[in-house]
Length: 314
Ligand code: ADP
Ligand code: MG
Image (cartoon, rainbow, N blue to C red; front, side, top):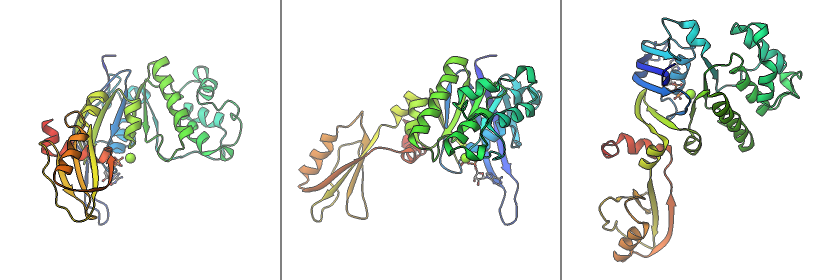
């Protein structure tokens, strides 16, 4: 195996028209390499094409064109080997309530053609902390346990690459931390390459070595997390003036706007402009400040920044 767990070249997906829906180009010539051994984040707003990309990797959605290589196996040339190299934890909880965790894992292993002698069911049960519940009916498992079982199902064939589609969406903090601990351990102890989608920027920041951002089916950024976060150091200062006031002059590098409620907002890069300088400019204009607040950027701001000309130049 070379350096990349996944190599994607010119990947395009157009969903066919159905009913009144026109055809949808969900992925547009995406090129993306994902290094082996990394924890890689795929970020993007709803409808960006994240699940489409992941489902193509998983073999659940057929690509329209392009090349996909998983663990060195071309999907079209070696479909079986490429499928055996990847495990996917889907976003939805699709667990059969009449199976016990042990049975669910055994069935999944069977689907992947893992011979009985090579099954690692007990190991997986232990890894996901469901040893105690191995023989309980799934309908008696809590939501968190079901989610861990989904993770277990993705692991039965010991894939080199593990893909998680929004693993922590709508999950409470305790379970989220537990899932992440599990996933980190897999990465550290087994060297499993982890690919995940999330819309929690903070989570991606903490977990991922590298991040790709996808928007409208196009890759708009791909960098180490540190470099990307460096680009995302915008900060917005929101100032409510006392009485009527017009937008004051600002130092270069500050973007100003006035909101509907009359508040001024000033956006700038923390690394370049000190908040004190912005406040000073406001005072100099003779504006009395009634209230002041700061806003940290969220993923949406990052998209705006990255898709605007200014963001591209940075
Ligand atoms: P994400 O996971 O980033 O939210 P998706 O990959 O699910 O995005 O969707 C990308 C785009 O493709 C969206 O506009 C979505 O409506 C569309 N889409 C997804 N699945 C289908 C499908 N089976 N048929 C038609 N359009 C689809
Ligand atoms: Mg999705």
